[in-house]
Length: 167
Image 1 (tube, helix red, strand yellow):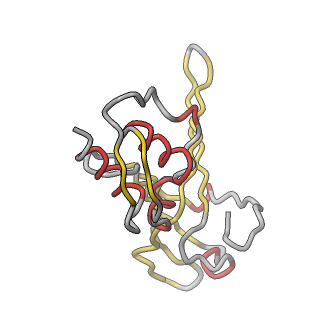
Image 2 (tube, helix red, strand yellow):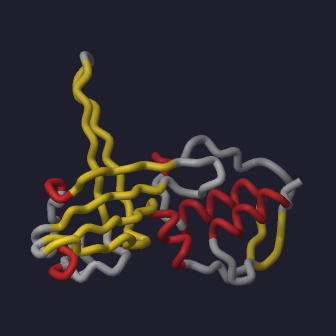
């Protein structure tokens, strides 16, 4: 979905050479790298600059039926842009999950007063806009009440601070 498309979907499946998913315990997000071989001038037509929504759907046929996995990512970087010959160009779209993309855009500047579990769940639901169905069971009755002010920090930094200082 281009930034200027007004939610108009463009299928780029035929332009994709390779997709790599990276997940690491030290990363806050799954990172998806998409290698694009662009022979239709997609880069200039859509004025790719980052922030575009990318919807990836993977399917697998199994004896029990078809499994479909659908995930939403946002372009955080466009790297390795080259024009090896006339008529086409190559580049990589580095994509991150929606909540990691929002984390980079938001700064928390408000007071708080609650248990650490409730505060973390509040950040995850309200600030990072994660649906209830994507949140695993989270213990919100832990710890004593914490009070303070988020001093203009990102949601991930606030969550990490709450975790470190909850005991």
